[in-house]
Length: 363
Image (cartoon, rainbow, N blue to C red):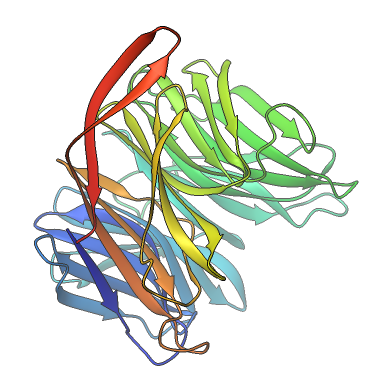
């Protein structure tokens, strides 16, 4: 439907997460790499209605709107890094701001109609540890201390990061996905499933070279029956109990994922005609690649996505990233509105043909 290019400053600006806030699309990220940035965009054409740029050394990664309020999470630098939660009203006035009690960082945010779940990292406490995973459960009144907190690490741990956290609507379980590095400098794809009180239910750990290793797990999506996770080298499918169903390992980076209309819409990147370009990969729920689209193919500059979710509303997908079309020292925010419309695509599954209608337009 449209592509919006936003250049908050002449420095390095980028966007990470996107969410819907009433009549607007919200984009969060950073201006000049270290100033927190929020923009409200019109859904119809991507026009900027309102912007907010903070003055402190902070970065935003994810957002969610609940009850007429906008919740945004990220990092703040106050001597050390701390996780930070902002609450805004519809005019982007700051209603509340809370930082973590100990040095850490927040990267992802989820909600189960009762509480907020925040995923990120905090500093480790054993010899050789840098960052360990942390999941917090919080009330909507973020001024209250976290209801519960769960630190996640193993004996072989050196550092790791949660890239996405989500609540399975069919079970209420909390899924955290990301990566960690062990003492032997090997990398692991990691999933941890928790109940709503953050009790650990299952750990799925794929070391480098194993069947399920896809580099970092980056994003998570649910369809009510299965769970889909995008990774740096492909995409994987699990039952709601964490049993492996299928893997598509094609070596293509898969950063962000959203499910809708019996398809997976996965955003990543590829090296095309000499430039890193953003790509939308469309998979069926058996992980077969149905079609791919190069986004911003006329932009001959580095263009990419960062962590942070896309969002599906109706038949529209909104996703944000950045590019360097204005020069190597001036990156800008790029927001895509993609419309799912009506062309027929047929895929073969054994001897049965499955037909669905899907077209993605970014114009």
